[in-house]
Length: 285
Image 1 (tube, one colour):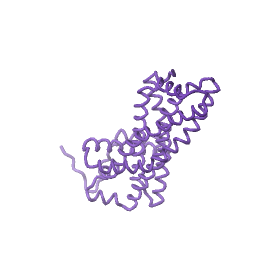
Image 2 (spheres, one colour):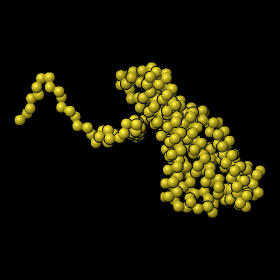
Image 3 (cartoon, rainbow, N blue to C red):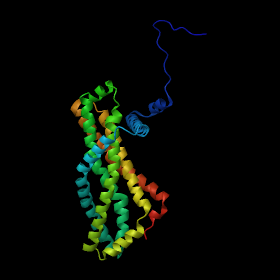
Image 4 (cartoon, rainbow, N blue to C red):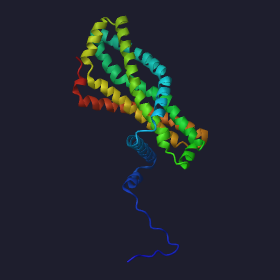
């Protein structure tokens, strides 16, 4: 037997889903954070699904974005690694010479450079240079209502504007990590010859005995995932910027702060997991 709704009666209330009930149970100040994290994860899922399901149509734009990223980040990444790495090198050499273990500088630099400093420098430079560019560009398009116009024309904004930027950021972060790691190794070699009471041969021998394959692929995977998250976070902030030019500026500031914090936190947890899965990384030979 069917029920007939009375004219003017209120429509039946929709029962909230499990996700909505969980979000509603979160206290007010943290609810916004939970919602933003969920929306960022949703955008990440859209990017991965669309890029994998239809892997064509965006590669030319991706190559253009990769070239622009390399042109903008090559010297900042190199100079940042040279300056910051030089300070760490001087402190490391001084400490090892004091302990009478200057010939272990190679082992120290594997831990300091390849596992920590290189990936950290790449993430900070890319977030500060490219992340701001992504957020400001998408935010300006949002303010000029270009994104709404593209949707009216039936175009997929994620495929046109987000996927090329995210892929380019992820791939170039991994390639820039190779650059900064190489610069760090050269810095250690120069510091050993100029400040350390040892030879370059001992430095190379110590490094070769303590450099594992897990260090190399782990650093590349870490920077690849870091670039992926930077691209998604900055794209999300740009796509959802509101309030005109001031809103775009706030979105850029928020994106940079979130990316900087994410680089620190993700670097810590990734290294902890990698060392737990590969106990050899905890031993210095």
